[in-house]
Length: 387
Ligand code: NDP
Ligand code: MG
Image 1 (cartoon, rainbow, N blue to C red):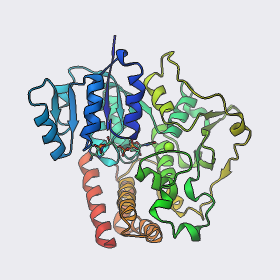
Image 2: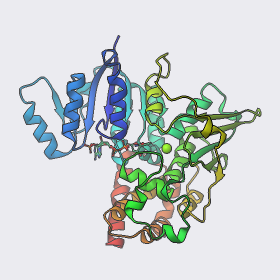
Image 3: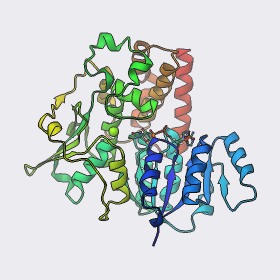
């Protein structure tokens, strides 16, 4: 029987990789739903490959355009995620959640009810809304697989083991383009310097986050939430080759290390085929890299954003929304050259420490509306303070 799947954000970097993987085995998949925001050209191309009958396009103009184009066809185009009941009559097998930013949280929460497995790449959703996601996963008995490479690696290393045996989890960081730059030089970096990631090819936002090390701040929070671990059990290690993604030290003396090529298709492929014998065509084991892992502790003085980890609560609160929204808005201003790197760093550290935001460290998110409202408020506040 064909595996029924949906891809949220199918036109993005993770979405396209998911499409390429299932395209290789097309006859075994029925793609029930594809979604995008604006990129209807790519969405339409994907629709034709898999003969998809349901599309969601959230940008108004793009929605109207596509709706007109298909007015006489048996293809249903929706403008939001409110009508999932019309699309799914019963649970599908697998969903990839790969919309970027906090906008991905609402669709992710809505689709959990409609899918047996949800693979989540969208890290902002996990960071800001984990308590809501976790509740929905339990309520609808949906299996969750993390896709971010470090978390996919940890998940693989600790599957079928008792979590209480975990002593420490190490996640690696390539160090990004500024690994060998002193802070003085980093503070003068331009957007194009920040976008030059040495190992991974990714979208602009996540590339800047990798340069500032904010991506690792986010990934430590993701690790805390997904695996219910205290910060004291999580450590970042610099590993410029990006071959090892995670190491788990167990209390029984065993250390497990997970290495794979720097290719997001590997976690994506394994999230789709995790219980099957399907093979992924990969390179030979890279002995040169293994012989020279060169793992190092990270220097907090070089990357001051890491200080943020000290003030992140142990359980999911609304404070994480403040951090994610403030960083998101500041990255966007930095990329548009409205602020320089030094202002970006100073503003982020000062804004999240504003007195008015401290009470949120004790507030667990109750619903998505609270998260969205706070997200909008923080963005407005940043624009007020920076422009
Ligand atoms: P991209 O920016 O490449 O793609 C984003 C996708 O989301 C596109 O399909 C886009 O549609 C859609 N989208 C954007 N804005 C909206 C919106 N307002 N409403 C609905 N859909 C929207 O992102 P990536 O694929 O790089 O990343 C996706 C997520 O995965 C992020 O959260 C990222 O942090 C995470 N991640 C990514 C990794 C990577 O290697 N790229 C690695 C680990 C995690 P359209 O194309 O029409 O704009
Ligand atoms: Mg990662």
